[in-house]
Length: 340
Image 1: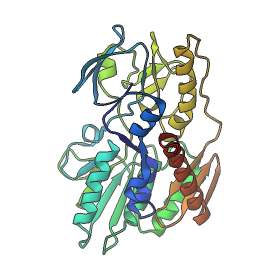
Image 2: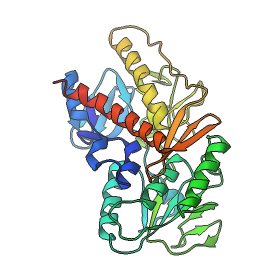
Image 3: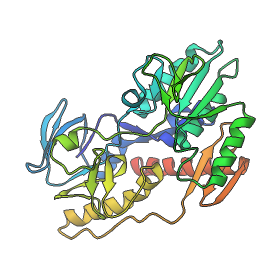
Image 4: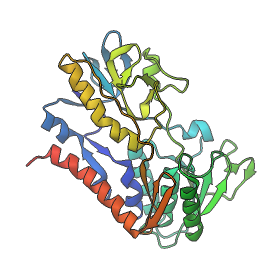
């Protein structure tokens, strides 16, 4: 059975392209109900509230207790913007992604004829992509004023300085104000390293996700941040009948960053190990990240930046490559969910 709150899953990698008019809103959806039907699996539209790993059961919001022999947890992370930055009515967390899409879509439609000031908090690839996308958002009469607040880790941590330099130069060309420092909203206004900034109409938080509470409360082994600790085969430590992957899990044998790229490449490994367990065999597959991975960062104006180790490229051909990869990935699930 598949327990999930919605019959579709939104691919977050295409959300910036939707904001800037490169994709339609519905293009980035994966048909989970169709995939379950094609696989002969039961789909239950519900949320998990708690887990009892020893009793092999979960508690759901609407369907009560559901039992399992083996479980695979890939629920992603949860928003943490209000906890870290301070609660503020202008704050929009990118997580959960569907709520973000609804809120930012309504905001852009409501303010289509008025000037708009937006601060994007987060210096990672997601923060840069959203800043570029909002700067080029479709349907606005006036170009919004965008401030990108980069934390103490600097721009694009984990990427080579060549890539960070290229992204900062593009932000400058587009009139995006990049500010290094730590943001705070607890005083009721946006401050960066204690200094008040200009009032903002909306504040977008792209600062990564936190772990959900229920795995820790259910007794699963978690790290200091609450992420489920898993071995090389993605098995929960102490509970080999439970697997976990993606942003809710943390490998204990090696460091694997939380990113969509690693989550996607972990998928086939997880599937192989689940098939092994279900057929009475020992899971043996393990995901090992490459020494360098290709990241594609849309600049919202028909171009994109490619990051591959120390190599950095920018141009329209990179944007075409990103669009081709994104749409091919979505299409692969569409073919599985509707083989006709």
